[in-house]
Image (cartoon, rainbow, N blue to C red; front, side, top):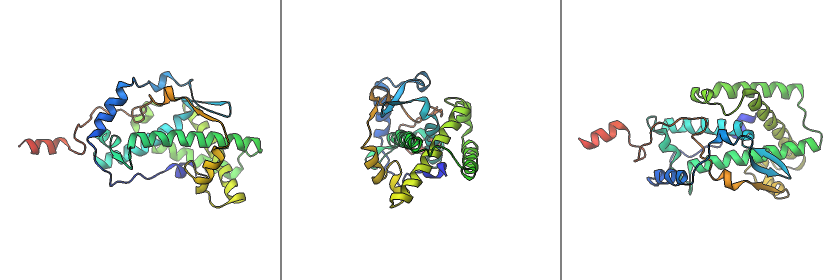
Length: 238
């Protein structure tokens, strides 16, 4: 249910960019914030309702795991290289970061709309499906992420519940108005029309300084030449 809709495939045939390392250096020069020190700070305001950095925990865990798994396929020795690749006119790190914020805004907006229409309760069947999705989410977490959770499990589970109610409202809109559930995804055209009707203000001063990929993950290596392993470099020297 919720977990499936969050998956947005990133093309494997990416363009290798040496500029990736320079990008990380640029981000660092802007004094990146430490996520754990800003949990109570507002990241975005939706119709006067504040969404905090802590409210992003579920989306950060999910997106960092998804990208890191792709990174291990790309280069298991230097997964940070994959985060720094430039593809589709942007860096993977930046794209993943925008997915996190986009999904959070989408779900919190639809959750509030669901409450206004009295649709913020789940049926017994929906509760069961939510239970399965929550279990899958935790079982899929990387060991390093479980060691560096941004907040407690109960808080994250509540965020998953909010996402489930938002998805219920999304499905309701698709049934009532058409044309499809996908049209009301965070990147869907019909959703963009609804979003435009609401006052959404992002705290850019803090958000711009958040570096995704290093919150629940730990990258000890960065290869300056993307895609080149230690063995490759050894052969090159020989």
